[in-house]
Amino acid sequence: MKRLIKNGVLIDGSGTPGVPGSLAIENGRILALGNIDESGFDDVLDAKGCVIAPGFIDTHSHSDLEVFKEPHLTPKLMQGVTTEVLGQDGISIAPLPPQFISPWRKNLAGLDGDKDDFDWNFHTTANYLKLLEKNGSGTNLCYLVPHGNVRMEAKGLESGIATAAELQGMRDVLQRDLDAGGVGFSTGLIYMPCAYADTNEVTELCKVSAKNNVPFVIHQRSEADTILDSMREVINVGRDSGVWVHFSHFKLCGKNNAHLFDQVLGLLDEAKREGIRVSFDQYPYVAGSTMLGVILPPWVHDGGTDKLLERLASPEARKRMVKDIHTGIQGWDNFVAFAGLDGIFVTSVKTDANKDALGKSLVELGAMRGKDPLDATFDLLYQESNAVGMVDFYGLEEHVKALIARPEMNVCTDGLLGGKPHPRVYGAFARVLGKYVREEKVIPLHEAIRKMTSKPASVFSLKDRGLLKPGYAADVTVFNPDTIIDKGTYQDPRQFPEGILHVLVNGEPAVRDGKPLEKVLKGQVLRK
Image 1 (spheres, rainbow, N blue to C red):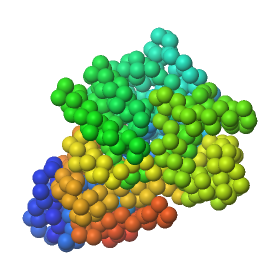
Image 2: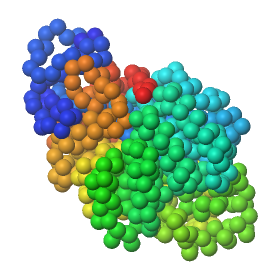
Image 3: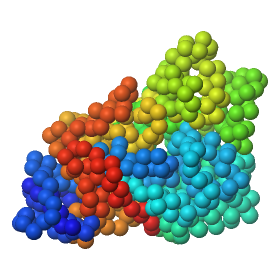
Image 4: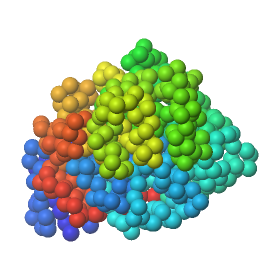
């Protein structure tokens, strides 16, 4: 099959401005760029008035389980994403020893959802990747080996510092799963059981990552009050292990912490001067999204979700939770403190019984239930077995712009796909191109495309992706730079953006003339 995309402006992803031209594709690969005679092609797509760019790479995705429910991954393709990086935040699908399936599904549900009609007995990352291939997907998929799963296999779900034998077991599991094709190592140091790890454990595992020349992708311990100490820990890990550090969804939470922003940027500069490799991804919004259970103090999570539910059922434990939330715990990111009960909204639940909570703030939830907001929230988490998602408003618009302009930045969605999701699931990439490039001119168009394509491809060593170049895979996004914009809102997030015309994955249109082709599943599993 020979296919031509004609009459566009080629922006190749390298960071250079665009030039008029066409793009030829044969057998899923880029054949040529430039002035091309359109005769002899089996299919011709017109890109008049549009940019022809490499397909966008979403470096922080939560499609790990969703792909088995909706393989086309339409919300990603409709904003131009052709490759997603799974296995985020240190807690994901694999590896998963059989004795931990039940508690782990509950632990994961608020982040990646759950699925009953799914065979959870795959055990290893190698088998999970094979399941992805068998299932098929609209986008290309690659996988970070998650710290929490590695720790669970070697130590279980209990808190405590790892023994020498347990730490060696973690190293062995991580190496096994990197050998299976993992493109990096992730952790989320606010999520259990990752949060139980000390700096030494993280550093030792990062030495394995460095040896394999893969990045360390981290949701750091604090993005709020103690962010400076948190960043110093991460930078020390990078220095001591030699690993490439990639901060997940980099931001500063809490308007009360705005005075720390210059120091945050200063630490990035300091690491760069020292020769530590540092990058980060960012979604372009002042609100985040994660599992609602993170508002609970760390001790509530000790031992896994079943223990968490026991504590939620205990009036005495609830009193202690309320006290800790109101007074804080040193080193703990207290979401209620930096977002407020009126700035945290329920986005997903597991059962129909609590569907009325969707879109409601925790204050509104309390009013609906006739209870104190925290007590109503504890009830909701208990009734839903902790499988509840949330949106939290944490930040400042000027910080969003400053981070977009940083050289370390690339774009991501961090998209949780269930319930009434954050609008970033549908619009993050289009929002950067429409709001921050065209309207506010924070960065030029060719630089934004580099941050969506070749830059993330270089961080994750995605060979033959991220550039329009002969011989490279034909992942291509065609969009109108004059009209592209996100449409989703927090009240009505499930809206596709405007301005995306065609999206091709491995040479085959998955979006054509602005319409999704949901039976087209040409994505591949990309291994290291």
